[in-house]
Structure formats: C-alpha cells, structure tokens
Length: 227
Length: 309
Image (cartoon, rainbow over all chains, first blue to last red; front, side):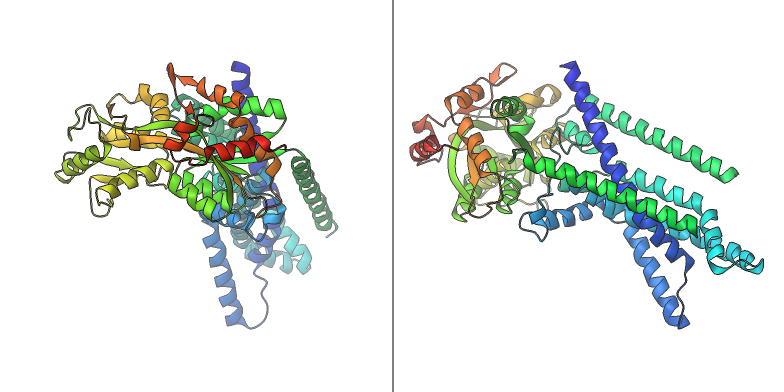
C-alpha cells in the first residue's frame, strides 16, 4: 500500500517533469532564434511601414505571452479530438497532447523575453562593435553572446509557467491516473476528493522541484554573468 | 559563424531525437490495447472504478483510461469519438445519445440513490419528508425569504439533470441571476458538498459521494431520502463502431460484458464504504431494471452474452 503510494507520486512527478521539460526544450529551440531575430529589428525597407509592422508584431507576441492555458487546452482539444482536423493522429488524452499544449504556451514567452533581452543590448553593443571594425555578422554574434543571460531567463520563466500550469493539460490530457496525471492535475483531483493532506504533499513536491530547477539555472546564470 | 551553425545543427539533432522519442512512445502506446471510459465524477470519486478496473485490467490485459467528468461531458466526448464507452446516469441524455446513433446497446448496470442534504438546523423544515418535490418547494420558499441557500452542480451532470427535472415539476427553472438563494457552482459533487458545508446550504447528492465525504461535512445531514424519483440508475453505452471504426470497440465490448457479468455484478455489490453498500447491481435483476428505465434489459443482456469479442 505504502509502496504503491510513493510509486504513484514518483510516476506523477516524473510525468510533470517530462511534459514541462520537453515542452520548454522544444520551445527554446523554436523560440530563441525567433526571439533573437525579432530583437535585432532588422526590418529594412520603408521606414514607417516597417516600424508599424515591428510594433504590431511585438504587441502580438506580448499578448500571446499571457495566453490563458485553458484556452490553449481547449484549442488543442478541438484540434485533436477524433472529430477534429488532427483526430487521425490519436493524440488526445496522451502526454504528447499535454506537451503540445504547453509548447504553444511557452513559445511566445521564450520569444518575448529573448526579444527584449536582445533588444536591450542590441544598440549599444552592435554600434560599438561596428565602430571597432567588426563585420555585421560578428557584431550580431556579440549581441547574442551578451544577451545569453536574458535567454536563460526566458527558459526559467517558461519552465515556471509550464510546470505550474493546470487548466490546459487537464483538458488535453484528461487527467488519467497512471497516464496523464501530473502534479498540478493530481492536486485538483485530491482537493476534489477532500484529501487535503495528499494535495498539500503534492504541492510541496511541486514547489521544491521548481526550486531545485531554478536553483541550478540561477547558479548557471550568475556564473555566466560574472564571466 | 562556424559556432552558430554548430549550435544550429546540434539543436536540430536534439529536436529530431526528442520528436523521434515521442513518435516511438506514441507508436508503442498505439500497439497496446487501451480503452477510454468516459464516466461521471460520482463513479470515480466514490472509488468504485479504482476498485473494479485493476481487476479487469489484470484479467484481460487491457488498459482502461478513465476520463471522469459530468454525464453531459462524458457523452459529448463519446460523440466526438474520444471515448470507447460511457458509464453514465442521466436517462434523458442517454436516450439522446442512443437516438443520435452514436451510442449503441444501452444497458443498466447498477443503481444507487440521491438524497437531499442540508444544514443540521434545517431552516426550510424538510427533515423526514418522503416527497422530494415537496422538499424542493419548501427550500425555494425559504430561499425566497432569505432563510435558505441551495447549491446546484450546474455542470450538466446526471445529478444536475435530476435536480433540474425536480425543479421543472414545480414549474421552476431557478437561476443565480434572478434568485440569490440558488448558487450555480459548475463543479463536481465533492466540491459542491464542501461548499454546502461551508455555506450551510442544501444540495442534492448521490449517496456514494456523500458517504465518502461524510466525515468532513460536520454542518450537514441527510434530510430527505427514499423517494422513487431519487433513484439513480447507471447505464453503460458503447460507442457505435460504424461512426468511429478507429476506436477500440472490441475492448469496450469486453469491459461492458465484464461489468454486467455475474463476476462484475458481484464485485459491484461487494464494494462498501463505511460499511454501506454503495451501488446495487441491476444488470440481471430485470424487474428492478424495468422499474428504473431499462425496458429492454433482457434483450440487451441476451445481446451482450451472445457477443464474443
């Protein structure tokens, strides 16, 4: 009895890590380059028009950074249901559906934070580098190097949002025991069942896990900043 | 720029690896026999399914994924092809499901009953009434005077559907918007029971969930029970394989057959909480099944028994 209790908690915790970790990993691979490109603001051509496009684009990204997870979950549900356009994939109520939900949620966060990190160092660094005789590409590379801490911040923020998210994965994953139940959805279930002790235990695990991961990332960040 | 392209290539390889891993996992999953059972919060929250399903899984080596939602949503999921069978309790929604031809072979499995619970002080004075409709009338009356609160599940669950049908017998359709004594929670039974306990309110609950939560609900007690309209029959309905051939019809049929078999029915009868039986089997008790709204129970049982999935 006790063994299966801890076995289940372990299973739930590992699934949470797997889903949010994968979503953030794929999200970083997609979001970081896009964020960097937007941060450079290299929109050449007619100036007023380009500035308009630039402002619109960034506002859209900033809006999507605050995308409500339940809405993402609902959209993913409607896409993946058997009567939806992607129903043939058979992905609804699987961990993959949960990763897709969180991926859609974290990509704008990573783009947005990376974008502003790159944007804030771009002008100073690039101009100095160019004036010291660097080529455009060399200057761009320097900017990216200088903004790397901001990129790491984007990953920390994205992971925090993903691991604590509940509404979206509840809809897309279905909260199936031993299969798509994560720490957050388990907390909802245990609360619904009145098992507050269990719910609090899971909450403590969630919090300490988030702390451990943030500790590692923060140490990396501080080390990088000192260099 | 060599470094940038190296990073790029490494990223692509990493991404391909991750995607590949999931594709493989998905493939392995699709090879395993799995069924999705969409069911109500009451069967899940009472612990019945966590007690039954491991036995079935072990015997037939089929994994059962349980989606526990209200009856309305469970049927909607099944209609969309996202479940293989449903275990629900709302005759009206069940018949709609079967008439739409998405659901087939509705068969009675078990029943329990609903009760009206409320604050121990009972401001509406319904304690001991045999007539649930009369009790509702008194709650509404006391509510209008500001002396009572009623909490509705308001989630299209079987419990909610029964509650609404009792109000409609009184020619009422209460709503939070116009009646301040009527709270629409939009939540599961457990949550609503705890809300009722906090607010010292009346509500309609199934016996199973009540018994599971009784210890925590110190401000509440059972006030009305035993009325025939409070009986709560559960049905199993299969999703029509002609609508969704990709679903696991065979697995669903095996689970349904097992639940209405002697073995399944005995297990249901032996499931107890606080020393009380929670669900009474009816699959093979034809008189009781007829009484509870399954006119062709014999026909369905004969059909199920003849199937050899």
